[in-house]
Length: 229
Image (cartoon, rainbow, N blue to C red):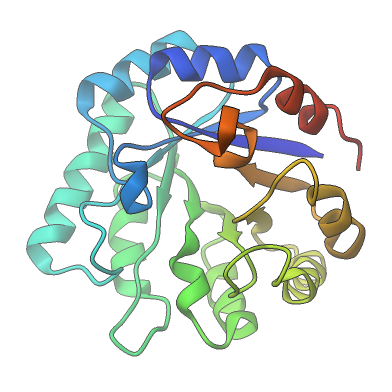
């Protein structure tokens, strides 16, 4: 079982790696659900850890619809990550009828065939997730995983849908399912018993007092990073 942890800066990235995180998601403005970090923060984090870093590419928190101008910003941000030596990004875009915006995704993929993309929780706003998963499988060379709570408010409520997605991912040999949303050390084992995913994504659940304003809870981090599949 692989554990990914949200970090906001270089100090947190170093701490999370030391505490056993297998991969990091780097964000700014976590109170808005996570936006694109600054160039300097990306540079510092990529230079300070050895584990993979997935950099959030999201210019605003209003929705997951992007204008041509916003797509230009997104493309520049992706190029910045690549120029700094990174390959991992977290990106998702939807059409106005809440389907995968394949045109936007193709524009991002066209920047480099070396990209390692996590399609983020925009996926949870899609009604038919199984069909959406099949659409993303067409891009599995770059879209390596999908961050989702199964279309529900959290993974506990979405565990049955998450199980279906994990089964579909194995059947189609497509992007892996990265379970995230409301995970805590007290519920992750119960969720895993149903879902049987290989990757889990934690945020406030591994923080002191469940707060992003505070550091990681060492005991909790050890508990989740030492879990076995």
